[in-house]
Length: 112
Length: 115
Image 1 (tube, helix red, strand yellow):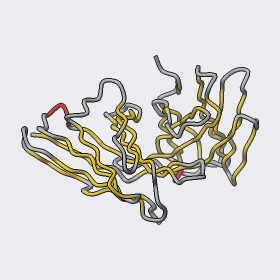
Image 2 (cartoon, rainbow over the protein chains, first blue to last red):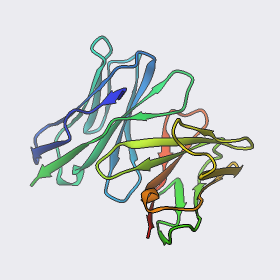
Image 3 (cartoon, one colour):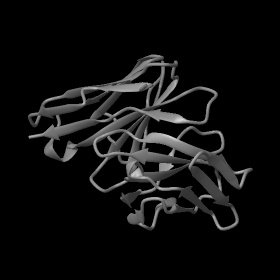
Image 4 (cartoon, each protein chain N blue to C red):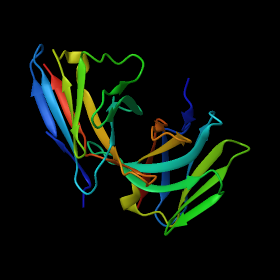
């Protein structure tokens, strides 16, 4: 039973356009959400996060949106750059716990 | 720069031998560290939570006698894969929780191949 779902295993976007990566969750106890970027044979790198008390968090080209009622969050990257090509993992955490539950990841390819 | 290091980055061992992987927190003292395993094209699966000075907490289905975890100091946790078998071949990643902050920092991972 996957509590964090990334239903798109891959996404291709033209350089300069917007990349939108989606994530759905089922556990209503999750109150903190994170996005990680991962290159092959490397550990994940933290990108951006959002608390459940917010619906948007922005950091440079990266914006995360949270829709609690729909149990859905998305990561927007604009403009997309070839260096953004990687696997993006959505992760969630319950209140009072440090344990992260990860989705399966979405492989983003930004085409020059 | 990296805040969490792992050693070795790659290891090949023979079936039946044991392998130790080290995870170090470089910039902060981590009372809690995590060990994950990732199979190709799969998510990161949490294996265990390592708490400094106490026994690790293992996730369901993870054999604690096979995957020995030691968190002897605030900056070092080790994972020992005992009596390794080819099915233990995987990418093992550790992470450290910076106390008081929300982010977990990951190591670069260790590729274990058991022949």
